[in-house]
Image 1 (cartoon, helix red, strand yellow):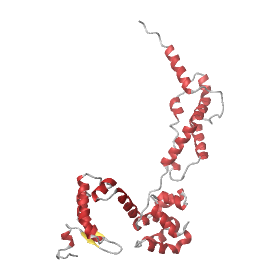
Image 2 (cartoon, rainbow, N blue to C red):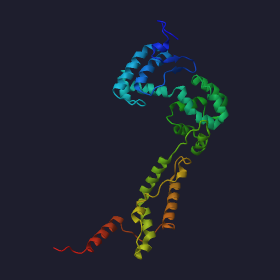
Image 3 (cartoon, rainbow, N blue to C red):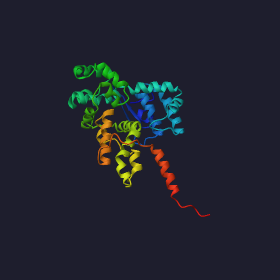
Image 4 (cartoon, helix red, strand yellow):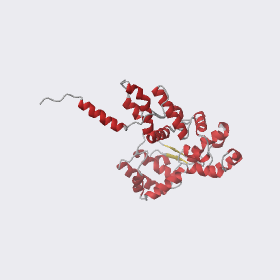
Amino acid sequence: MGNRSGRPAGDRLGGVLPLPDPKHPLILAPAAEPSWREITRIVVAVAELLGRREFGDRLRLAAHQLDSRHADLRNPGQEEFADALEVTVHQVEETSRRIDGAIGVVLERCRPFLFHLLGAETANVLVLPPPVDSREFQAVLEEYAAEFPLPVSEFIARARAARTTDELRRELGIGFAELNDTLPSMTPPLDRISHADEHEEALHTFLDLHRKGLVNRMRWAALGDFDARRPLSGWPSLRALDWITAPAEWEYTLDTVDTESLEAYVEEQLAQRLGRPAPHSGELCPPSTRCAARTSVRSRASLPTSLS
């Protein structure tokens, strides 16, 4: 490959060689550590590969500017990017959305669901080699339209719009645990989707809403020890309820945790910690803050008066 002057493209582009191909365009470059300096060498070849050589110098200048500002190589800020390219932030956002919906990204989003709905063998046939564009992809999927939870065109449209695999799963109405069973069995395997943080937040919200009642029930359970003047070991930690955490088995099996499940789990945890079910009724307990104040007063009263 050469240019009008007869120089090979690799020499003209500093050793970077663009190799156009309708399905698998490629850029060959000497091995080097990722850096903005390397980006400045490669972007001109990228412009040529895309048939837009006129953008090469502009992209190289933008890479130099981002380098001089020490921009994050993997995730430069949108304002930095817009300023370097002399465009608006809105234009950067719009372009990002268009790129994000390109066929390669759509295939990656669809792949787990193709494995889940059609099986590994069929899924591999559909994506290897990858289709050229969305039209070709839709055409090959139409043969299996009956296996999809919605029309193939809508399936692709939702995959294009979805930001995560979990978001697309919800759009398609596919079970959380069921898809998590599929992900590790893929080749190469994908990580399962975790909802541990969501479950922990739901549990903390439930405990905050019912904290007063739960603490009173633990106080009723401890009245016998209190009346017998037996010390209550770990009471401050017990009443804080921070020892109740979401179980590990929820992480990959439950999409959301309903109130009934939270209530049953908290009851189980209370019974295990107390050694018996927590009572649901008992004597009227004064607020724990008042008890703490009385204890403080009595403690001070028991101290000997300081000698003058």
